[in-house]
Amino acid sequence: MTSGARRKLPLWAETIVLLVVAVVLALVIKTFFVQAFYIPSSSMRPGLVVNDRILVQKPSYWFDGTPERGDVVVFEDPGDWLGPSEDSGPTSLPTRALSAIGLYPSGGHLVKRVIGVEGDVIRCCDEQGRLEINGEPVDESDFIAPQRLCDGPMPAGGSCNWEAGPVPADSLFVMGDNRSASADSSVRLCVRPGEDCDESDAYVADDLVVGKVFALAWPPSHARFVSRPDAFADVPAPSAAE
Image (cartoon, rainbow, N blue to C red; front, top):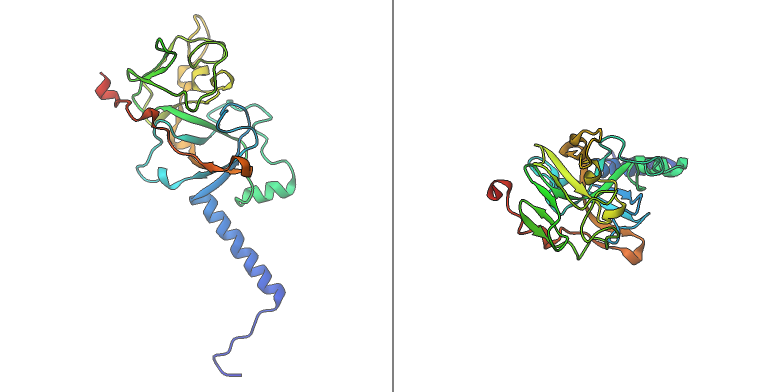
């Protein structure tokens, strides 16, 4: 044996090393780059349905990057937005272990579309049932579900006449695409006379956002990339709308 020769590890030791390396890589990818989640409710129909597996990328919001209008984002519960069934996540020991290292979709988070960013004023609705953001109507017909209670988006309870904003600094106003079945920012507005509520509860802090949904990975029949729709492209900045 030459002095440069190395002793080969036993098969069991090589297997352990490979498993450790795989787990570390999975943790790094989950923490910094891509994480899998599943859709817990019908609030994002028709584009995302219950138990769809989605992939969320995080680099877009690194450093000075922030969510933009139209992004579909995953975020931590701002406070009692989730019901018990939605908050449960994986239930079996193997799926919980795989979820911890990023190899299985995790739960306990919400998935919504960003409608308003810092400074925006959102109003429901114009004569065609469209949301107005900073005075600009937005045609969302390509991606929101048909509405049951009125022609436009509404909070739970059926109010079709409300206004939100200006959105506070470092915050978002979010809504589900299935507007009549989404417990989102619009539900938490103080729109009913005499109700006991805090309108700050309607907004999601930027630092609660995990990342942006970029792909629907499972089931294969639904698999596709998820991108920001063009409907929000003409919305003016808050200062331009004043």
